[in-house]
Image (tube, rainbow, N blue to C red):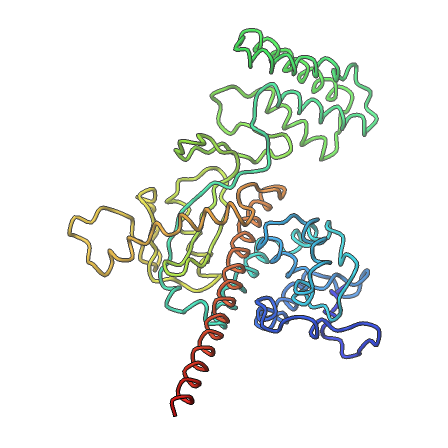
Length: 443
């Protein structure tokens, strides 16, 4: 059924509980933002994903939206944000609660199901709302949205560093568990022998005895092949889950060193190996993400995940289309030399970074120098807003994590802007009162 309404909308009081509005500071950033965000629009939009007359009522949309904002603003997991919510009255007020609650609002797994329900399009609406709230508060100026900087980065997946021996053992282990769950009696599961040879392989490799290490790796590969063939003989029509596991196991078993589109993780086969030329980290395992930020202010107006490790220039068209959906069409976009030959033919004027040498007008060169301002913004996205290690499942999880990380960064910038604005008002009042006192004393 449709989600419940927020408790803050209830008019009936309670004699035994004190309202949150009486115990919180009305000047707090979350209180200010709670009045600016268009909750009705979000409830109407996300409410369309629920049926009208079936099942129990869904969880309040305002609660789910606020929990995701708080999660990505403070770099918390689903479990952590729900447990911290109980202790923070400002978080509860922002979530639409009328009274202070002493119990968990939801089970953390509800956040996973809600993300699947709204998809990437819903995540873009959350990012769009941060920009709209900034425009209402005048933290984001309209002229700032005319020029954007675009760059790509790698969003790593929550996977271990892939080695052949570990992949063979992990794939065999998953297949053995799946066979046991379906009452398929294997001739041998190799649990004890695989553990022994995996330990030997790591020790030999650490001691630089590579010939012996390769021999153990070949043994683990043999065990994987035997388990795959045994399951195929005894299960003619596997279900979808087992079929996918078998396909991944076969790919791991058959892939060679110089093959393309290799599998680097059993539970996340969509992971790609990307080299960005970094000295401290030669290879990263995840997907490429294109980030767009305003040249002034650094507000994130686009974050889109791309799979297949495309050339940077080929991601520009879709990135600018997303920017237009979230905020508005920019007039100019500034990119680095990795975007040469991008092939974009839209209405946005694209400027590729280059050396000046007196041929670039000063008015344009001033904005081109600010292209690199997006680099620290990407660093903040990774270190503080959960883009460094994506823990959401599948390709859809990659896209949602990138967009929600951008929304969390904008949300934190709004909170900081509100705090600075209030300090400025207080200082202005203090100075004016001081001047009035001096004038009164002089007269």
